Length: 467
Image (cartoon, rainbow, N blue to C red; front, side, top):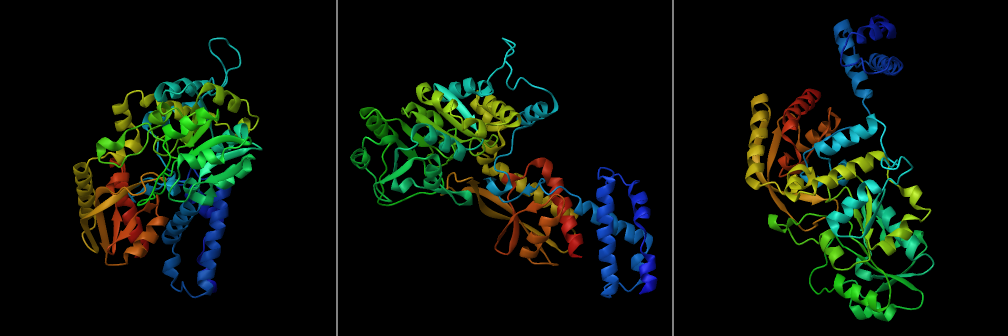
C-alpha cells in the first residue's frame, strides 16, 4: 500500500502538466490546485479501500488523464448550457424561450459597450429606459402606453399595488390560478395590499356575479387568463367585452393578466385558439400584463400595456424601481420586438415561434438525420429507431395541445433507458430527453441542426462513462 501511495504525483507536477493542456488553461490555477487536491484525496481513499491495487493504474499517463478529466468536470460552471431533447419548447426548467441570433447580438453589445440606457441622445440629458421599448410595444399591440418590469408576477403586483391597494379586486373563482413554483394569484394579490373578492363558481361565472359584488370599496375588475389549464364541459366565463362594458358602467378599470401573452396567431398552424395581445387590447381592456419569455419568445420580463391614464400612475409607483429591468433584458426585448414588425420574419427568426410552427415533414427529416449520425457512429451496442410522438409548447401555454413530431428512440445494450437518461445529465453539455416505450427519446423540434454533432459526442461520453 505504501508503494502505491508513493506513485501518486505531486500537486505541482500535475499543475505543470495542466499548463500545457489547452482544455484546462481557462481554469484558474487556484481552482486547479483545489481540485487536484480533491482528486488526490480520492485516489488515496481508493488505495485504502483496495479499489486500486495494481501499480499500473497509477502510472503517470493514466493518473494525469484521470486528474485532467476530474479537474475539467469539477470546474465547470454550475449554471451552464444543456441540449433540450424533450420537445418542450418553452421549458421552464431549461430556461424557457431561447433568443434569436440578432437578439443575442444585441445583448452582447449591451454587455460589451456603454449604452444610452438612460441617456437621451437628442437632448444630451437623462432619459427613461422604458422609452427604448414603449413605442414598439404600442405600435405592435395598439396600446396607448407601456411599461416593463422583471417578470409577470411583478407586473401583477405593481398594477394591484397602484390601483387596488387597501381596496377590493373582483376575480372569478375559476381564474385563481397557480403557476410554477407554487406561486398563486391570490397570494400575489395579498402582497399588493389588495383584497381578493371571489365571484362565481369554479366552472361558471356570469356578468351578474361581478356586478352583484361591486361595492364602494371595489377598485378593479380582474380577469386571469387560464393559460396553463382548461375547464371543459359545463363551463362559462365572462368575455373580455362584457367585463369591459361592466367596468365602463361602474367607472372601474378592467385588468387582465394574460400569463403567457403572444403576438402571433397560431391558428393557421393547427393550434387551438389562444387570444393574442392585440385582440385583448382591441377588446378595450384598461391594463394588460403578460410574460416576455413564453410565447413572445423574448427575455424574462413582465410587460404592462394599456390606456395611458392607467399606465402612467404605475410608472411613478415607487415599487417600480425595485422591479425594473436591466440593460441586457432591455436590449433583448427591443431586438425581439423589432422582429415582430414583420410577422413572417418573426415566425422564422424567433426560435420559440419557429419550433412551435415547424412542419411535421421537416421534423421527420431532421429526426432521420439524427438517427443516421448516431447509427453511423455506434456500430454496436446501440439501437436507433424513429417513433411517432408529440411535442408540447410548455410554459403554461396550450396545455391540451399535442403537436405531432417524430422521435429518435435510442436503446443501448449496456444500460436501461433510465440509466442512459441519468448518465447523459453528467455529460458536457448535458443532454435532456424523455423515456417512451423503454426508449430514451430525443425530439428534433427542440434540437437545432448545429447541435446534432454534439448529440453524438455526448452519447459517446455517456457510453464511455458506462464502460
